Length: 186
Image (cartoon, rainbow, N blue to C red; front, side, top):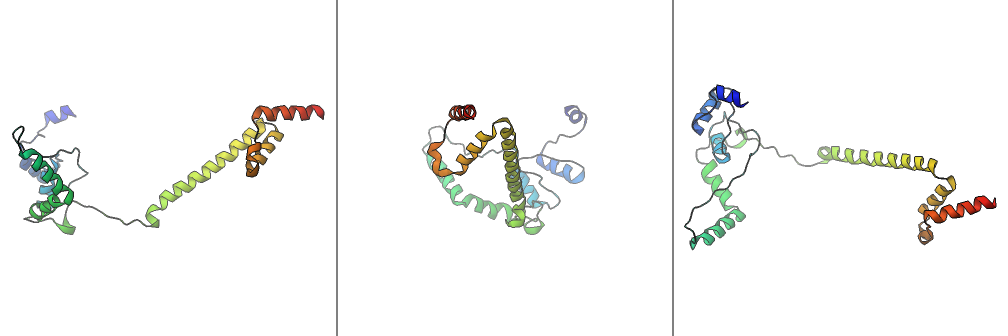
């Protein structure tokens, strides 16, 4: 891929040149998200595909140890929390001169309400898992019953179904001893 990129004229010197190349040729251009969002709002022939690849914040440079550092940081966080920064962005970024706003915008976002039809696949998967696990328990129980004596399985089943006698449950060794004694006496 790098050899292909070296042989071709694929690199651009500015965002403006990259946008022009996208509009004129079969070309995809990666650019910083804020600039990309602005360009997409200004030109309806541009489309943003996918989300942001990486997130970087902006900063305000102040002298080290400045008394304004904490004040400005707290105010920015407060504005961000209250949504003031987003409102200002809407006012100055999108509404002023934006030609691709509303339904005609190239940045498409679909909102779908959740209803039974939308989540039916989830319920189908859950029900399938329930059926599969029930079948596997029955098969395991059947295979185990072939290995262990019938009397022992009956005793375990009786104890499992009769929850009033939980305290009477015996260990496997005790059951085997009792079964051997019964077999000798018969």
